[in-house]
Amino acid sequence: AARADGAALQFASPALRCDRATVLEAIRYSGSSLLHAATELREDKDFVISAVRTTAASLAFAGERLRRDPEVVLAAVRKDGVALRHASKELRESKKVVLTAVRGNPSALAFASDPLRRDWDLVLSAVRADGSALAHAAESLREDVNFALAAVKANETALAYVAGPLKHNKEFMLAVVRSRAHALAHADDAWKRDRQVVMAAIETSGFALQFADETLRDDRDVV
Image (tube, rainbow, N blue to C red; front, top):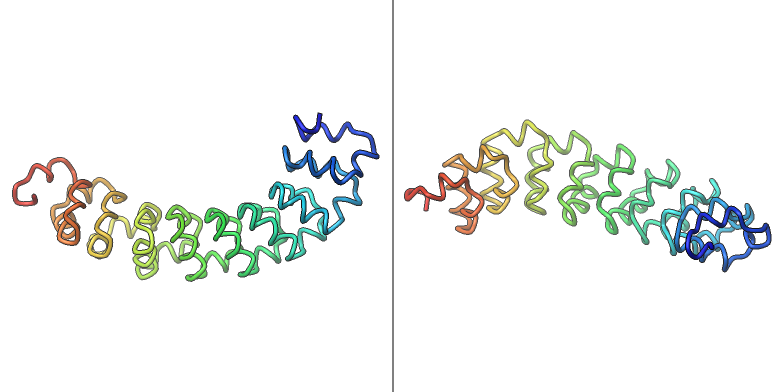
């Protein structure tokens, strides 16, 4: 039954809940199966490393001591960065652990400590892989003109996640499209209708015209 539904392990005999092969097979189907394993397995470092390498989410059900263990947590976040959410507070403050997590899954930035969500290099690494990771950065970075420009230059989709005041700032938008013309695709509709912004974008790349409002795409002076 555990092969079909890992949660069935809770109804297994004590002997099977101590059996490494049986528990690991259950974890393959449901990380929560580790919760129903014998305490000795949940506290066994080598077994838990095997478990998180099979299903990263099983980290949530490991013994507290092991959720503070860098080797165990690194194994989990290498499998799936979002497993960072189950790590101890101390390891969510570790730049090495968090950087490993966001390299595997940029959205793991959401579970990093506040100081690391303000870390320029770490956040930029996450944004480079997935622009939406900027949504999880500290507000101080999202509203910083220099960082926001660097983020959009690294990944144009990040424009949708910069702080509101910047998204409505024309000087910022002009700087953005002069750096990454196709970022116009991710700008608010008002900028797609703005002649100056659209012209700046197509001066950088004519292909950016496809993202302009229809009224400007039908304007001889723009085309």
